[in-house]
Image (cartoon, rainbow, N blue to C red; front, top):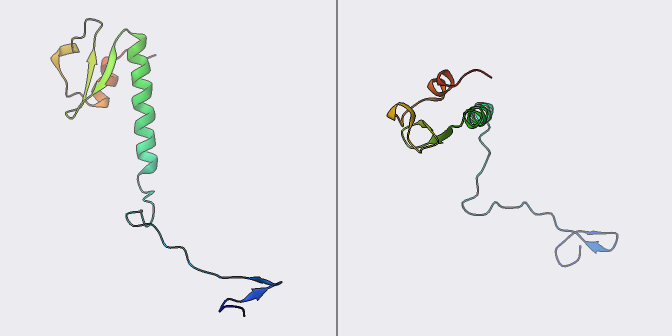
Length: 92
């Protein structure tokens, strides 16, 4: 031992457990990750389908809205769910 550390092949070695930075997450929460990814892919697919029909899919705190070329919401609604958006778009 040299300086309190074990020596291996003439090189002092120190083993120390790394401590996470303050505020860093302790363990990742993978529960629901597949659901989140599936919802994101579905939203992107619906956004592309709306764009193909000349519409824009936008989201807000209340839900989703389909906006036409004149920048007016379809059916004056801003609270559509993804299921409702899908039913309003023609199947591709």
